Every structure is written in C-alpha cells, then in structure tokens.
Amino acid sequence: MNPAAARNAWSVLKRPSQGVAESVSQHHRQEQVRGIRVKVLNGNLEWALTFIQRKMQSSGIERMIKQEQTHHIKNSEKRVLARKNLERKLKSQDLARKLKAILVKKVRGL
Image (cartoon, rainbow, N blue to C red; front, side, top):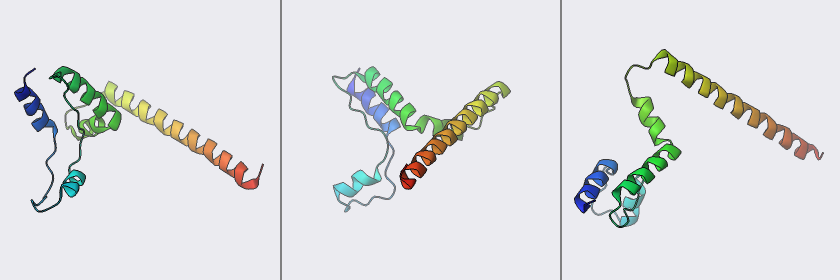
C-alpha cells in the first residue's frame, strides 16, 4: 500500500473543522476537529480500514449514516428494524426498572 493511497483515504475520512482561524492555538484546533483517527502502521492500509470500520460500528457513526440514506427500505427490513428497536426499548425499560428497585431499597435502608 503506497502512502498516496493512505493520504487519499485520510482526506475522504477526515472532517474539516468549521471556521477555525489560523491564529487559533493548536489546542483549540484539536477540539474543533472531530472524527475517528487511525494510524496506518507499516503502510498496512487494509488493516487500518478494517479497524476504522469496527470503530465506526461501535461508535454509532455507521447508524447515523444509514439513517440519513433516503433509499427505499423493504418491508422485511422495516419489520426487522422495528423488532430490534422494540427489543432495545424493552431491555432499557427492564434495566431502568431494576435500577429503580435497587435505589429504592438503598434509600429505605433495606
């Protein structure tokens, strides 16, 4: 993998900072630029791309990108998404219920 390919991939993946003046310190530039950074070690671009894909999945960026897509979603996909959302909601409610019960016991001194 050549360095030019790595630079091209980086330019596609990086997000430009919005309205950062040249007089702003380096610290402020670091705060304004957001995104996922991956170091390409020994020119191993394929490893870096798989790593960044895993990071995107875990951070939720991939979900945000999919939500912005405006293509047609099949009914079977809608059902799967609806079922997953319902399961997530029920799991969250169950966890909240358990935490509330624990906190009530703690407050009452039981």
